[in-house]
Length: 152
Image 1: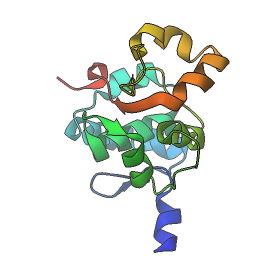
Image 2: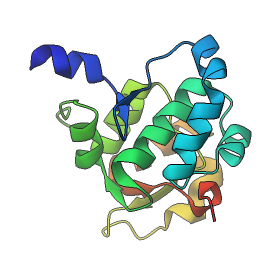
Image 3: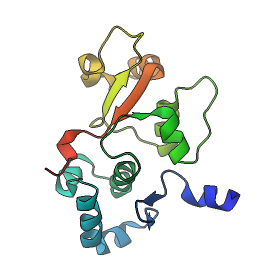
Image 4: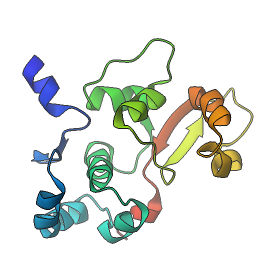
């Protein structure tokens, strides 16, 4: 079981067992196949390509779609799907993206009910202001893939 956990890493597989730990060259070679998988997941890969420049992050977004679709995702669900343990004193969503090394601006985030500010009100500053990010990221409640990347 431990080997499987290590192998899966951060959302290791797309639906159907397609691995996401490939090189950029492999990604380019499999672009057509990934496009078909993205279409089955209802993700518009062309839009995702415009939003996300790093192929590894595109794969993680596709993996998020394979696990959760376009539903709300809590931090606990993210960590469980990625085979990660929660960190004491760190918001689960923040912990996931810290491990991923990236937190995409184009996902839809929401704060806990106790926070009187809507995420959309501070979104343009959230990723640029380190102090704001450190303070407010502790209150993230859920995220979801935006309809902008959904194949209509």
